[in-house]
Length: 71
Image 1 (tube, helix red, strand yellow):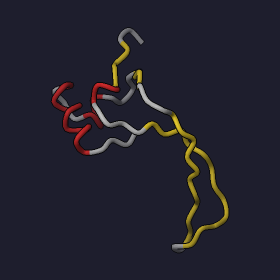
Image 2: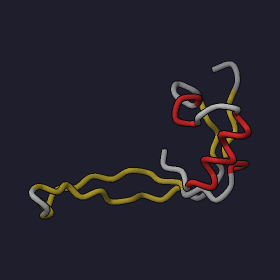
Image 3: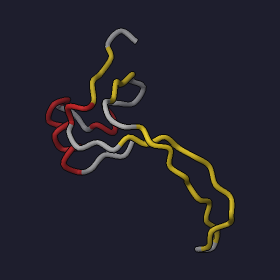
């Protein structure tokens, strides 16, 4: 998950821990619009013509993330 620095700071305050460590292995409920994003493979600074897709949700507020307990 990629977080803008302002969201990461707010989330760290809310969790009282570094989100990169506190969220590992946790089940999250994320509110926002999921978009399919094309990820290009690059070799030697050039696109290879190969790609795959990832689903990204852009966050603007730490309140868009909720921890699901009991999972």
